[in-house]
Image 1: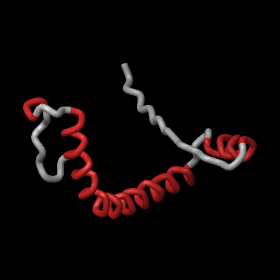
Image 2: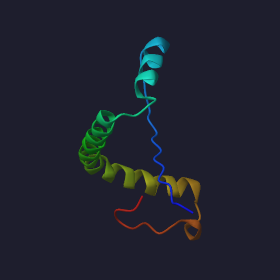
Image 3: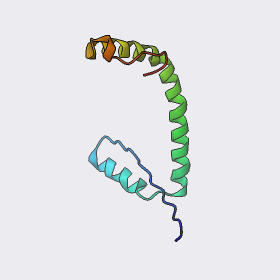
Length: 87
């Protein structure tokens, strides 16, 4: 039996109108070599941008998690222990 490699891509598209969305769907439904490079660049850009976002919102997320744990589980024995940096 021969092993077969399969590549699956998930693409999220947004557009202001249905017609422009369908145009984008037609453009990207059959990936080409150029698309792979574009997707790689988009992924890299998202990763660098997301780290800056996480650094700015992480302290607020931790504070929210602590507050929410008191509202959802008022009994301390039911709450998960809070460790810095864990969400």
